[in-house]
Image: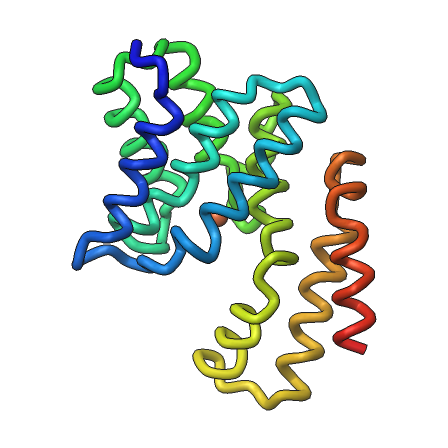
Length: 188
Ligand SMILES: [Fe+2]
């Protein structure tokens, strides 16, 4: 197995995002980098398998990039399996990464199977990355969903409050607390 497997996986994801037919190419810059950073911090705090968490973080939305948003947890798990087999990553770790990816979406049925800490970290880091991207959420709500400024502000505030209330890991709460309080203050 290559030593710098995390870097190889990161590079693979970055290259896929640069391809002309990539869906959501901007996700690399505006989601993957910051989500990976939260996941890595949580893995360190919680004594989880850091390498596994880092790989799962880079790959968790790869299905979205290559095959589109719908069912991207399922397409992503398959793409991750193929890529990690190609890199000779240990089979039992590939299985765990697949579970992390399959269960990372709060909106999907499979999400009750986060029975190990690495899967919890991936789902939580993905959700909490919203606190790093408030301007992007305004773009989505105002431009794509065509909401008024008032509606956008309220819907973003509600979304962030829900995310805060749904935090499962105490370490996440500590990590995000200042940003949550600042967001509530700014969104009035
Ligand atoms: Fe994500």
